[in-house]
Amino acid sequence: MQDGEVTGDSIRNSETRPGSRLFGLASAILLIVVFLVRTRDEIVHIDQPIFEGYVGRQVPTAMVARDLSRDGSFLYPRLQTGPFPSWFLIEPPVYAQVSAWIEQFSDFPLERCGRILSLAAMLIGAAAIGDLTRRRSGLTAAGWAIVFFVAWPVTCRYARAFQPDMFALGLLLAGIAFRRRADESLAAGREDDIFPTLAWASLAIAFASKPTLAPLAIGMAYPRIPGKPNHSNLRFLASTLVPTVCWYAWAAWLTFSSPGHSAGHSLDGFAFWLNAPGPISLLSVTNLEAIARNVLAKAWTPVGVFLWLLVPVLWRRDPAVRRWVIALACWFAIVGGKAHHGYYWLVPSPFLAILGGWFMARIDAEHGASTFLFRVSARHLGFVGGTLMAALSILMAADTYVTPEEWKPLTGEISRIRAWLNSTPGRPFVGHEAAIFALDRPGFRWEWSEPAQRRAAAAFGTKLEGESPAALLEFYRSQGAAWFVAIETDPEWERQGRALGAILDERRIVQRSGRLVLYSLTEPSAPHERP
Image 1 (cartoon, rainbow, N blue to C red):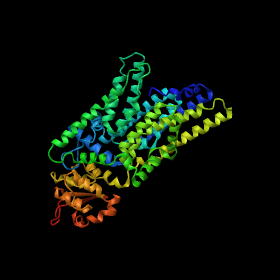
Image 2 (cartoon, rainbow, N blue to C red):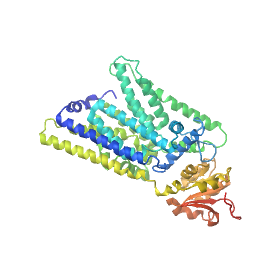
Image 3 (cartoon, one colour):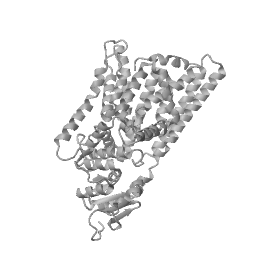
Image 4 (spheres, rainbow, N blue to C red):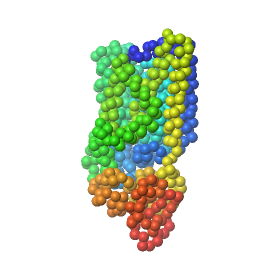
């Protein structure tokens, strides 16, 4: 982000005025308050079970981390869902490995370690945003950019989740900030700084942890560095992708050279990406509705979305804005097929926060020649508006600290059900992925929707005969499943559980733990004995 400095000169110069200093002081106090509120929320809920947000992303990550903490291998990251051994090769397990290391060194519960890692990455990202914005637009803009980034609903929801998204984004932002400092050192003739190394390491780890961030490298691909017209950073950026490319070469070799279907779930994930690129997803009304819901309610609030209107204003005057808008468009072209998942909207949130910071600082700077009353009114209204948007953002994410009702049975007393499962050590059970993680036993992943049922069977290299819950359950029985764990609070259990009535009748219930029910899939001719 070397060019386009024209946007910040008048803003920085205005910070010396008395009214601007007061506005900056109030902004600093707001920043402290936001951090205190967020810190309080995270400390109180640090041990919340990882069943909020998108469970289907947190649980597999935690499974891999648990395997790595039990002497698993980084090159063979494993899930507890069949077919076995079930390798999870979608991305290098960098985040899971670091979470496992934190658990080993701290003796904290694994889930707490993952949350701490994500929150630490958020702080790193916030510091990087502040540094980048301060250099371009001054301290006031930097403070507001940090406020918005930390307070966005999408940050509140997913900067605490047990998944690599915030970890990778924080390192990406740190890498951009380090690269900026490295370029300044290079332009000044200092080539022995540590910043190039820090930039390379941060970006390489970020891209490896979340390969879908790779298109954002376009935003850093500026053609030259001031004072070094023949120097390009394109080779530097390309080199940061080498570890990621090496991982996928390894994953491809492992997938196609190994017997059985150990990479079945990974192949399922890769197939999804190939079949659902971003622009095509916009042809689906269902996806468009989900994207609108995420953008308005889970990402930036209905008010925050209007900050995108600043892009046309800055497009001509700031080449960096043009680069980053193009980079985000390329990113969406790749991930748009999964943009109905709220956590993907973490990626544009720093850019939108910086736009918000620039706008707030502009409110303070643009009225130097106006009347005193007008300047005071503009600053007061701007400060109140920004404060209300930050407060609204935090309030709209309050439900992330509450475990959804459907998963609460998994957070209660489940030791008796685990004892039954342990009585047949060679036989997996059937249950939701979250139940498999909570019970800490190998199992077959249960799915309700027909497309998901087909994918679950395809992971075994088999085409499901019939498309119904009963067909999937019969298939799992043929694979050796001995038990079925039902979560009666699951909304789909109420709607589709009857379809399993011929298989899961009352005679097969062997244990209840609240709304968690264990069924036997063996013949119920003889009563089951307590393990």
